[in-house]
Length: 382
Image (cartoon, rainbow, N blue to C red; front, side):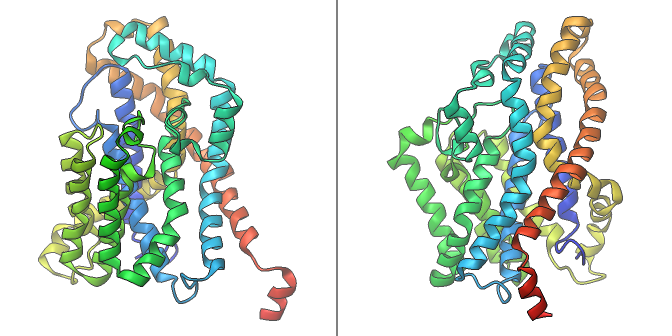
């Protein structure tokens, strides 16, 4: 375990993989090049969701003595930390996405002109209405089908994440009263029931930006955290109910994605399990763990949020301009994919590092300042 980060450093590597997966997946789809697994960026998003559920539960449980769950100040601290982790970078890129939305819409139409199968409603890029602005700045857009997928950013998942943060402290209070496993499985069942009681509402979303559609995967991450904490295989089995719920909810969930949800749960359990030193399993995963723990992997994890939010702002215009001004459209599928990767990836990661350093980290620091006790109180404590 990392003494500075407070979690297994493998998770940083996994976050880096998840963001790269989404980036490569969107490039392959936009350039009309199908690559097995890679061309399913939703799987990368599911990995992010699993990691989020795992980390939120793990950190909340470990802080329980210092920050009691039933305390209003604990909930305030949790929401404040999460807001300042997400909002500064999101607001900056959202402003760019809204201001230049019509231009991004033109670039998206250019791509669709070359590859009609990639066409989408470009009107969602150009919506500069007050309603679209307010719902996005307030993070309410994820609950509203008309606005849940309505900018050039892949921010439907950001709205989803913020809904999870809003509910999470209350979910933990329910687990305190009713039991951890029973509460979480019960909530999963309610999500499945809601799919049929509120069928029109569920089906109205073009992307799963509403929390009840994806809460089962967050809960799988939470159950996985308890499995590792207790060294309980039963909780790993319970976490696998998340993909079962995905089948029941069934909104645009492809069989490959559901199979990968189950595989990622098992894989995370294997990597994060506290194996006895020198045991066979510890030796088997030593090399993969080393790969996820190296300096490059942890750096990819550091910039993963910036890469995720930023990449379409670079990829869409780059592909459109390459198609218009070069012979890219005449190249083979793989050559188109490789060319766009070579052009875009260095730019995206360079900008993501700058955003991480000058926007994300200051945002986290500001959140800590907001939560710091007043100077007079600090003196008394000292």
